[in-house]
Image 1: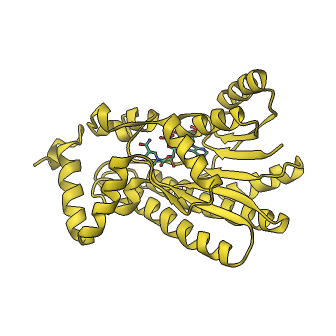
Image 2: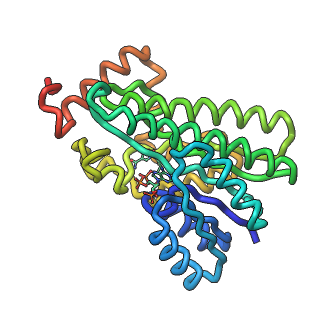
Length: 269
Ligand SMILES: NC(=O)c1ccc[n+]([C@@H]2O[C@H](COP(=O)([O-])OP(=O)(O)OC[C@H]3O[C@@H](n4cnc5c(N)ncnc54)[C@H](OP(=O)(O)O)[C@@H]3O)[C@@H](O)[C@H]2O)c1
């Protein structure tokens, strides 16, 4: 039986990854901060699907969080065949007005923890001759986005890092596949939370379901693809970014976000 470790397993796209993998018979290692929620999810999936769930509560913004998580799996003799670096944070608003500590945490979770976990588990997988890693980037990775500038930059990092590493691991014959998943707007609490995507007025028609995003991500990773953008309109959007300079894209995205931001009347128009 294969084992998958999912970060951000307590909600949103991460929870859907867990449900889909449980359906496919994977044992799961569930990681997030809210232990009670993970315990409930684990119990339900074990009862419904007969799989083994291990809960590891971790705050991935803390120093050495990735190293401690890796060591915890080693101590429990858990071998990870599929790592999904899904945990992520978003903060919308004027860079200078957003809390600096919150933005630093976003950088630590979205980039640092993801990079360290990829390093630790890719080495382990390469030693065993293979494995899969799915890293959550975003459609935001393809464009500089005013009012979401740190978030978009963290996702641009994840995309670039993952695509380069995909090639490197393949060329080295490690058997390890690493894939970047780039969802567009996806219906999760990240898009409802008033401190996060809830600041944006995004029509429901533009939202994909978390289940569909998760399913396409898993399938792409297991099929050995370097990158997956779920949804035709999202793929078209990413393709169109090739036609413009980065500063033109920043002007277009900045205008869209200023018009669609609920809570910053001073930057409208
Ligand atoms: N929703 C979208 O429109 C969208 C679009 C593109 C990309 N994405 C990316 O997809 C991923 C999942 O997003 P989502 O929409 O599913 O988000 P979500 O609903 O807000 O869920 C985020 C998950 O990350 C966990 N998490 C947050 N901070 C953490 C920390 N410091 N340490 C450990 N776990 C932490 C949360 O659990 P706890 O609170 O229990 O820790 C939760 O399980 C993110 O990387 C996001 O950037 C989302």
